[in-house]
Image 1 (cartoon, rainbow, N blue to C red):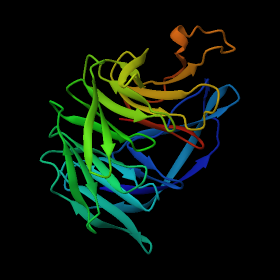
Image 2: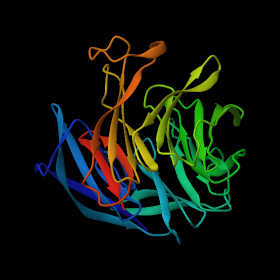
Image 3: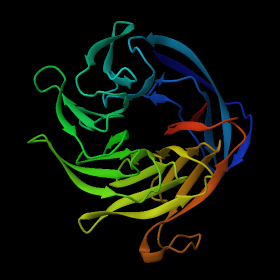
Length: 328
């Protein structure tokens, strides 16, 4: 089941960490509430000047969404914030919306996959839903006929597809897999065609997560090889422009800082090593004097947060109030 949570933050300083840090855990946050996918310990951190302090977060359960018959792996809010898509071990996708004071399942999508559905992602326009499955395929759903149907199935990965995400403008899809690859797909909405634009083999192990920058066509990936990699388009091809290495074990999730403007980008990563790391890009001519070879931004780890989670940190996200992390 899913739990719809309402949160209250108490700004009690429980610890101080130098520099920036984490957010989210098997959770999908909208403006005022979150969805809990699995049971996690999670912490919220807020930045003040040049340090972070921990906030105590209290949750009250607003609603329990029952219907899936196996583990619920992922959920995603529609851009409007009025529909929630969830997916899981039972090979189905469920669409939930509110009726009065209750959240109800409006649609169950059952024909797209033959194994566990690992992630779901809404297109920026909200008209399409992508789902990634352990059956090695990605399904694209739309409701042009008046109800949601699978309009396309993307094949190519040799093994389980772990994640699918739309680019900020909706012109690309990115997928990653246990086969160690990241795929980029060109999207043609008029003809419902999805063409492979690039296959990237930069990682040496299972790729767990891909995340687009919120404004640029800059893609980050997290892997079992303990690294985060950055990709961008260059001369009609996609290339790896940075490798972020500091974790000592699997990197499970990554999250971009959406509030960052004009100072270089910032991304957080969480790992099996029980830490959260914050990375910052330093632009050419930066005041810190950090070298930027080939005029590409230089990525540096500016903070490591440890000692909060006793075991692996599986998920995180940035929000208006700070960074939230969740661990097992």
